Length: 305
Image (cartoon, rainbow, N blue to C red; front, side, top):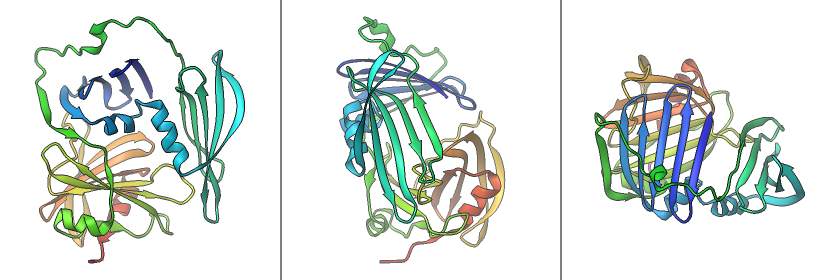
């Protein structure tokens, strides 16, 4: 997957990416407003983002570095050259009980603090993700037009700027039950046996409603194996132009019909969306169709507190 990013300090950004299935996507950020356009599915959305959300998007490289160092041991491995540029090689270690350390290697440009190469490793030393900056150009005199996204005349922009989009908020299951007004569905065991590590976050949607995002990690893997989103309003946003298929499976003891989309790229190789008892659910993860349905079948109501 290839991404091109242009930025002009302090607050102009343009990001173009191409996904093998989703096609071309363009995001332009001007100050606190962001406009996203997905060409293949003919969808354009305008949102207002907080400074905290921009930081979590990875547009502030120094902030990203602080987040990475917050819960890991770090050390410098010296200066190396990446595509002819001097880069500080940093190693971050995160201990996993009984499995050793998950390791992240980062080569950071010494002039701009921009990450030039990032490698994520499992505790068993397997490389699971590698991001590389192929070309870095500075002070190019970028024109203003680059940060003004001109859409085709037949595209209608969905305006979601009434509220400012905030980053997901870390939350406990007890608080989730208060906000949802019901008990959420959670998983207690991985698809391959054993226990998951979990991370619960609350995301406030543009309509004012909130949704629970839960990531499930296999100990020793830095990427989530399963991510489940649930809330009182629909949130999946699977464009009908994509090859979505209907599947039947069991959830909460009843037969459900849902929508399945195969993306083919880790950590979200596939996505499954469905509704049940006035609630909406989305699950995505490092599974094929059978594995994802099995993981969803393991979801059950959290204990009441």
